Length: 68
Image (cartoon, rainbow, N blue to C red; front, side):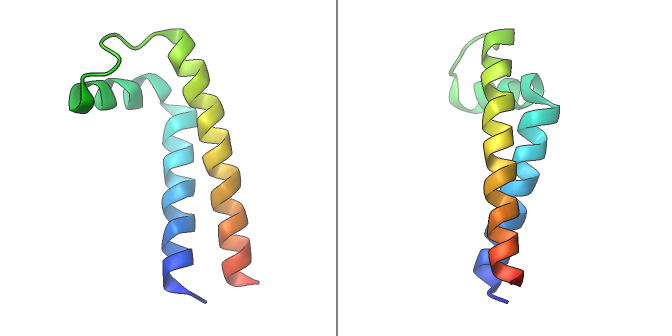
């Protein structure tokens, strides 16, 4: 097992779960840190959920490649 791939896979899975399950909260935190966008909306939250699914998929593939 390669520790960098394992770490990257775990980070992607965690990030994907956060984006998918709590998109408005993640957007508010990002807005506070980056000042963009000023007011998170449901449209941004829907996009964030899709990004979360992509991160989950990429994380699972990375973990599978690390183990296999």
